[in-house]
Image (cartoon, rainbow, N blue to C red):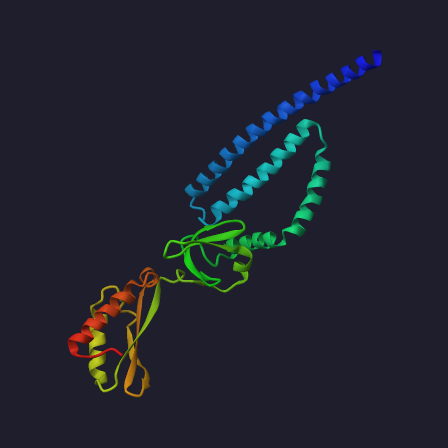
Length: 262
């Protein structure tokens, strides 16, 4: 009976001691999670106010969130009474195992860091990569999100993206638009040039400097293919506004002059 009372007393003491510690640890955990959310939101607003690159803001917020979560877990473990050094050693071993299992994810993480460091593109740029075209809407830790012109959302893994060929259509302020028209070779070249020059000069969205270029690209039997090269603003080039408008105006002008497109 005496031994039973002694064990019950020890159990009660243990439950009282660690029960209080566990309750405090749970309180610290919830308060810490609330503070982390507030801190990361404040950091993001601060980065926005200080005009930090939009590509970096989500990435830095995620990194800050991870660091604060690790620190919070260490504080909670220490409050419970466990050895933090042992936890760090366990975390290191677990990290090694997870790293071996998630080599692809680590490659994507490294690719994300590389993209944000070298900056081959930024949020808002129109790019072509891995067979996809779209506007970059978000650069995450592990992937880059782009929106296509027909409003599809595509997630590109950062690992392959960082080592792939990326075409950025928004680096330069202007781009050259190349279009071709095939007509009957019997039509005088001077007449065709005159019509095309008149159409190009009348289009306000086509830049006159650098000067447009019109030339014969190919002669094949009874047909002649002419190449028209004009410079436009990158936004107009992206959405093919000038291309569609130019084709319509050329067709109408050719019909008025009796020139048939082949």
